[in-house]
Length: 259
Image (cartoon, rainbow, N blue to C red; front, side, top):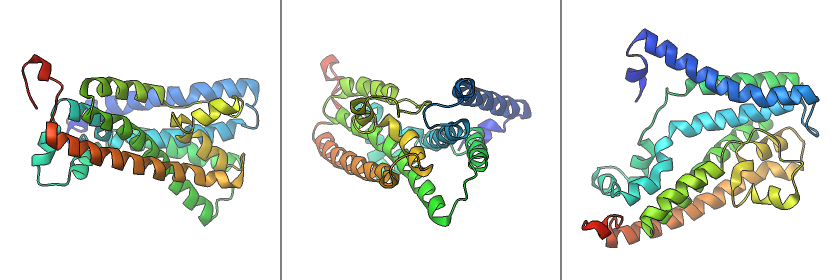
């Protein structure tokens, strides 16, 4: 837990909170200023874009709570999986709680939640229990998509330790945060950004579905993608663990060390 570090001194708590809020608020406001200047981007008005950005901010804040899950390729390639195997907990629980930081990004979650509430009011939406349910389901699905996507790439380290660690870092950069709608892009590029590189599932497609800017069935696409990616990640991880049990980490074999 990081509460001791954050609250070690009053000055550190204030400075850490303020700088974190300013950084994320700047990234949030910049796209909005562009849309304010033009009035809209296609069917996306300023409040609609604010909804999408707020949704993405909440997803990013939730993802950072479980940052250790993203580092599977690092643990595998450097032999750290042995540490997890020796602990009296399931491997999945050890991975999930590694670097768990529940209080580190609370300003991000506050920013996202506040902006989401403002945008809902500005759009004059009247959320029904079903709509709120779909919102929560899609938020969980977006977090799951990013986590599963990173673990699919991370599991490749069981077979190619050094290459997969670099590939995972590149994949994380490629699937960065999306700050503008994808509606105006060619169909083939949009398809790639919600499948091979699922950036569009982190905020754009769920927000589009929840705001009624797309077809009604789109509200189910992110949960379905999360299910499919999770199944793929689990299959690859289990196959990789069987491989790891036989070979261990082979990253440093060429320099006289064995796994």
